[in-house]
Figure (cartoon, each protein chain N blue to C red):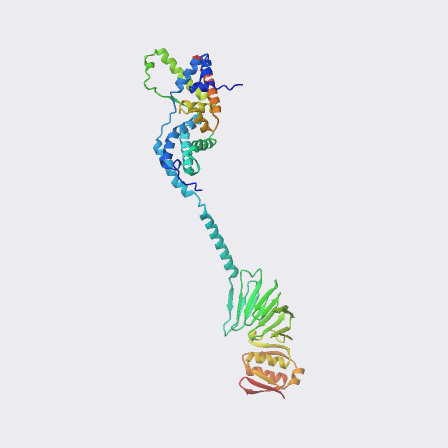
Length: 175
Length: 302
C-alpha cells in the first residue's frame, strides 16, 4: 500500500492543511496558553506541533489530525517547567449598551466581579482551567475538548463541574 | 452514587427535564449564571499573523524532506554496493600475485616477505601471493632456483613437475631440463610428485625422471650456477664429468673407469672458463682430455 497517496481528505493537501490550520491554530495556541500562561511559548509550541503534523501528514488520517496535534503539543509542554499566571482579558460586548445606563455603583461592582473572576480562574487547578477555558473562550463542545485532550466526555464534564464549584466558592462575596 | 456533572450541563445549556427543575431550586443559581455570562466574554490576548505562520510551517517541509535518510530499495542498493566493493577488494588482494622473472643473462635475487630468499637462475620465474604469505608460504616456480628458507611454517615450492615442501633449509629446484632435480644443502625437504613422496636430508639430491626416483648425494656445496664456479666435495670423476657436461653444455666420454672408482675431488672449477676447468680435472685425477669435436671430449687414463 502506498501511504503517500493523496486521497480527497488527506491532510497532505495544501488547501486541506491550510483550512485545518486556520480552524485549529487559535484553539491550540490558547490551550497551550491556558496551561502555562506564556504567549510566546504557546505560539512556538503551536507552530512546532503544526510542523510535526505537516511533516508526518501522510501518516496521520484527517480524523486523527486534531488528536495528533494536541498529543505533540502535550509532549512538548512536558519539558517546560516555568509556569506563569494566566492573564486574560474581556472582549467588548457588541450591541450591549445597557451598562452605559447603569449606575456608577453597579459599574464599580461589575468591574470588581470581573477582576475577581480572572483571579479565580488563574487559581484553578490546571486541568480544570484548561477544560473550562476551552469551552468558554474557544467555544469548543465537550466532545471536542475530550477528543483534543484524549479523555472521555464524562471526564471533561467532571472537570468543568469542579471548575464551576471552585469559581463559585471563590466568588462567594458576590452572592 | 450518581455522577454530579450538573454544573457542566448548565454551562453548555444541556440541562433538561427533571434536572432543569432541580436547577431552578439551586441556591447559587444567580452567581453561576453570572460566571457563565462573564466568562463568555473572556479572550486570550494572543494576536499573530496566522498566514505567515502557516507559510513558515509549510516551508519547513522542504528542508525536512532533505534531511530524511534515503530509505527503501536505494538503501539496500547502497548496502549491496558496499558489500560488492569489499568482496571485490578482498578478492583482488587475495588473488594478487607478485611475479619475478630473471633475465636470460643474469640471476636474480628475490627477497620473500618472511626474510627467506630465492635466487633465480637465468630465465626462471617465481610467483607468490604477498597477502596470504603469513598464512601459507607458497611459491610457484618455472625454471631453476635456489632457496634459503627461514625457519617457520611449511614452505612449499610448486612446479609443473611436482612440489617441494620444507621447514627451513637451503636447497635448489631444477626443472629446466624437463626433469625435476632437487639438491638439499641444509635441513630437510620433502619432494612430492603426484602421490609419491620422498624426504631428503642435507647432502642428498634427487632426480625424478619419468617416474624413476634416483637418490644421490650432493657433491656440491652450492648450486653450480649460483657462484659462477662449481664447488665439489669428495666428488668422483663421473660426478664431476656430469656437472661439467651440464655447465658447459658439452658431451664428455670417459674410459677412465678405474680412476672414477678410486679417486675423489674436492675443490672449485670455474664455470666461465671451459679450458681452465678441464685443465684442473686433468691435473687432479691425472687423466688426459682430448677434444674430439665441438662440444665433444674424451677423457682417458694416462
